[in-house]
Length: 470
Ligand code: ASP
Image 1 (tube, rainbow, N blue to C red):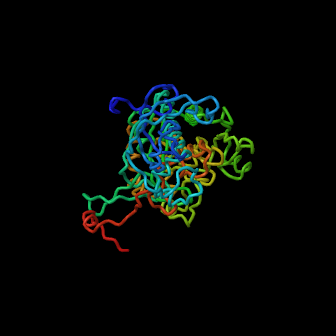
Image 2 (cartoon, rainbow, N blue to C red; image 1 turned 120 degrees about the vertical axis):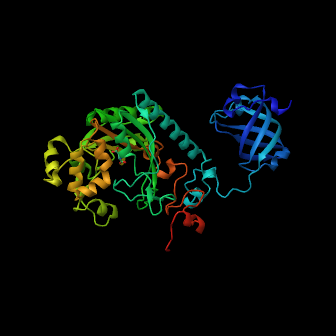
Image 3 (tube, rainbow, N blue to C red; image 1 turned 90 degrees about the horizontal axis):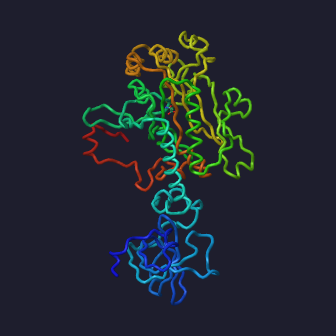
């Protein structure tokens, strides 16, 4: 029989094919030479299975890609391996073909990988992702993303994409800049978040928007943080703070349960910023007992009633640039102050006492999301920038397009962004965000595998009207 006539069988299906000749394709997971016999474990995306072959198979190197034609046999009772899903069978190899031979591997893939240095893991990320721990995380991320998306569709949200090439947004971080070839001397900025576009979608009448959004911020690198992250970004019209919080809580609970996560609370506790600081000394905190930590229970809570403004931290370049008066926003300049402080906000009085409608979602000591009810009237947003010391002309130049949108029928609205990478890290019981991302950056800001950023050739620079001075 030519193998062309046999369809590929996924390894997990072999248990239901006893007595049949099957075609398997995958990677040589392990190999054991026993004189005349060679045993290999063959692995595909679904499972591993033991294959018994003849001496020549000794030539196979670990992690080579092969195709096997073989007979599926039931294992005798005493040989059944209860630890693996295919432990009741083995495959008698009749013929095999090497589809791609693996040379000696630069990093091992049969451990959890935590013993290997980060540079090597990221340089060879395509290998690193083969290890079981990482394969599970990649799948978990896909399953969680799907569960969140389904939970949002069920609640009548519309998925909309917003531009990656945009304008500087003044959202508290340094922008990543992209030169414009067609506009000499001008630059785009990559989005720090889709904040302004999602608000304009509310003006557009979308009412319930979401997007899995890439956000790019030129922040100082911390051990586990790169320049880009993914947010589950959403916005809703005709809502108050409690409506957004209720919807988000329901979506998160549904998605966490869909991937087998364990929740500490069915109803997430709510703390004011003041209460959180008094009780935990931080606005992100871990409520779990030692046992709950061992069981990787997820302990979500809300924090509300944050101060709207803070004094500029003079060591933070973005804050210095944003807060011209010495005051800058704590979370989001587009937020609405709490209704009881609106009058102060409009007059620019008692600035340190003005509270914002911001709500943060925390989980196991991390910030898992944050959002607010927005200022949807031009004069309120203007008042925010006045407090930060902006002139009318500067406000116009920075957010004039928002003020225009707010004058043509923008409904009251609010939203949130959830940190997807962080949710996955917590669900997977990992402690580094990098483990939740397929191709994260190195600690020094190099891209995985491809070693960016790199120098451009002079012709490219010329076309972009750029002279470098280093
Ligand atoms: N745009 C905000 C952020 O990126 C989240 C939000 O308020 O929706 O943090």
